[in-house]
Image (cartoon, rainbow, N blue to C red):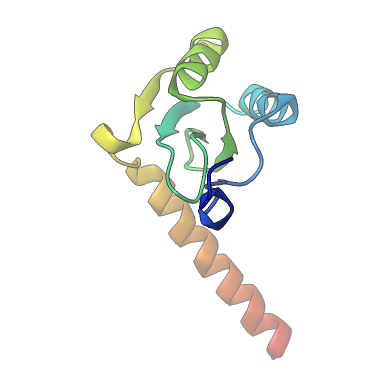
Length: 113
């Protein structure tokens, strides 16, 4: 250990991907149709993640071991896989989020009144 090693900031991005993440993705994809995978790159805050988006825009996100693991997972599941950095997020996902927000707001108003 060097003289200043103890003062260096350790770069951790949370817990690494494990088999529970993969199993969640597999089960989620099997319960829906029209699922596509979108690989999100590693950041200073999170590891590489894969975002699965169903035909109606419903989505889930989990950590993966890296971009290669995400593409391998998608290939095994028989689904297309895209890089978010190149393609962006699908419009149907944003539409789904907007619909969910409206439903939550309506429910909140019902609960208040």
